[in-house]
Amino acid sequence: MYKLTNIRILAFGSSDVIESGEVLFNEEGILEVGQTVEGGGGKATLIDGAGMTVLPGLIDSHVHLGMDASPDPFAKMKDESPADIAYRAVQQGTQFLAAGITAVRNLGTRYNADISYRNAVQAGTITGPRVFAAGRPIVMTGGHGHVMAIEADGVDAVTRAAREQLKAGADVLKVMATGGVLTKGTDPGAVQLSEEEMRCVCQEAEHAAKTTAAHTIGTEGIKNAVRAGVTTIEHAYLLDVEAVELMLERGTFLVPTLIAPRLILDQPGSVPDYMVSKVEKIIDDHSVSFQLALEAGVPIAAGTDAGTPFNFPGLLAEELMLMASNGMSNQEAIRSATLMAAKAVKADSLIGSIEKGKLADLLVVEGNPLEDLETLKTPKYVFANGRLFQGASEKPVQEARPL
Ligand SMILES: [Zn+2]
Image (cartoon, rainbow, N blue to C red; front, side, top):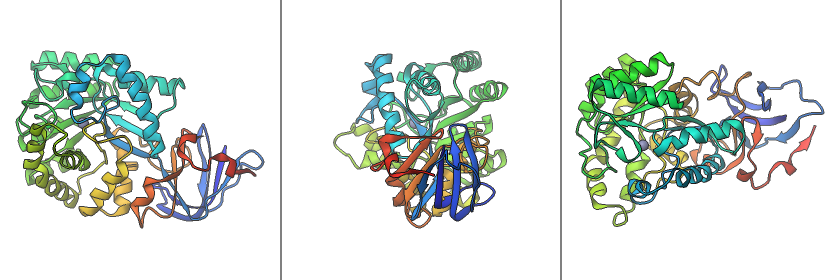
């Protein structure tokens, strides 16, 4: 059991910010939160939070555990075994935790390795973030990401693929609505799975009380996915007013992943030329689309697309800074990586805010991230499910003392 005292609390719950407050929690969850809280006497480890801020553990809403962030990750993955990918996922999981990211939504990994990874974390076999796993994405034959996906064509095959993924234990079903940057030979703007095919996937997910996510670049594919009923639209480089209105009508979330194309452009010469030329054509539209959605009030959850070229685990704070530089307030940026991200996986009754009864996924940083998002880059303490992650702290629990 831990008690944080004298600390700024970004709660994102019924109260937004508590200055010099207290939080009491253990592996069962958050026991008390407020200006001063009773309890913990003698049993809790006390941490003096003077000058620090505690916020909900960050949630990266778009990652690919097991993808290696090399210049051409699909080429690498093509020759890898399930164990190759699983071992890498274990390493990446600790990197996410060290960066204060206590949950990830994994939107595509070969062999369903992310589902096994999630199960291993839940069983306590390994230490890692909470995972909302899609496993293999569902794509048309030859579609974006086919190296790691189930290729399916037509409503029967796509329905079967959705059911297979649910049977394997997926929390979210991922579909490819358009071509992509990383897959050679696919035009990012081109429509891939049809609206009708994606509607079947959405229906299967809904019947099983699960969520859906669609990779989208081109405008027509975005609209197909929104009309089909997906929970979240990923990337969405080419939004227009009609697409934004459709998203507002449906309550569709946007996960912009602004950082992913920028990392590709930062490394010209190392990533394949076809990726660079695809990104160059759409990068400016990406910011415009984000701003259009932001101004209209589309719900936004933050994600990095970790695993794509040079997109190593733990860059979520950079993504939040990009969203802020495109017009979002620091508070809204942090909300997009906590409460909004939790809502996007329908887990906001468990995580995403600091409230009594929620799970104790917490991040403590020096300073005030509402004033400076840079503070998120150097976590002081990370608690995953009420346990201190030792790898993240320069001065771990020895500095804390019992009450
Ligand atoms: Zn992705």
